[in-house]
Image (cartoon, rainbow, N blue to C red; front, side, top):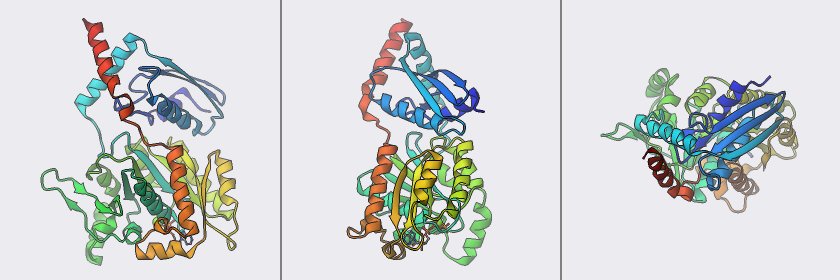
Length: 369
Ligand SMILES: Nc1ncnc2c1ncn2[C@@H]1O[C@H](COP(=O)(O)OP(=O)(O)OP(=O)(O)O)[C@@H](O)[C@H]1O
Ligand SMILES: [Mg+2]
């Protein structure tokens, strides 16, 4: 059974990009009613006709729909009263003052964790290719290799620079490669000996460090290449980046679906919505259709089916991701996957209502006078 508290917890993942807070803490959720598997949510926007409306409404719906046990969501959007707006602005101001951002990832960056139930299904290949495809479309993209032990993104991107820290800020600069800001333990380790040392040090803290001590800058998308299976990394991610969403990669065999469902299930229990499924290695040997089945079972879209294609392996080995390859069928499918992702999870729009804050402040001062 879903409870009102569960819904509110899930809604903490919805950010108002302009006010820099989640809709719950900003007092934008006017009511939550749960009736069996139907949830009613009241969303009070500062200004009803604001262009950010679609984005906030879409995020709210996605978050609640992704919850286990929820079949229907009714969203009622209203405009705030003057008094409500004043309350919201004081919360927003306090937040700015406290500047309590616990990570270096902007709360409005779209965070996409690429996960799977088991190893070797192509998470890293998909992550790297999505990141490069998005960068090719001029989005600002980061790629975080959360596979601390089994990193493979540096090789796949042909990155051989090392991570360096800024002398003043002490923050680590990501390595820029093929338009993507990359961070991976593979960019730290020089020898087997240091590797062992790092492993001991980083085991529990690597993800935290990568989120807190890397100067990611203003990103549209942060793609996270997850280690295989469920576990600590995923828990840490949900805790630190409430806006994170998940793509589940699966192979076409039916046997793969069960494990994939387990990951999706875990994601949902920690309020991480599943954006969709990517079926990888579709072809004669493995058959096809498993991805569509999984998507259907999870109630999410099948983002793409990537054919089994040797150019993916070559691209990974040469540091030249296959999305760059015009002729390759897999490259094309991956470019389409990136486009679909942009449609499903559009980058946060910032400029559209820049005047809004000024207007609100003016209204607030008027009210105070
Ligand atoms: N569509 C594809 N066609 C052919 N080979 C592929 C395809 N996708 C991935 N591969 C190959 O399969 C192998 C595993 O892929 P990858 O490393 O991306 O999987 P992974 O899920 O990240 O694995 P791990 O769980 O070990 O992190 C790699 O050699 C990769 O080149
Ligand atoms: Mg991998």
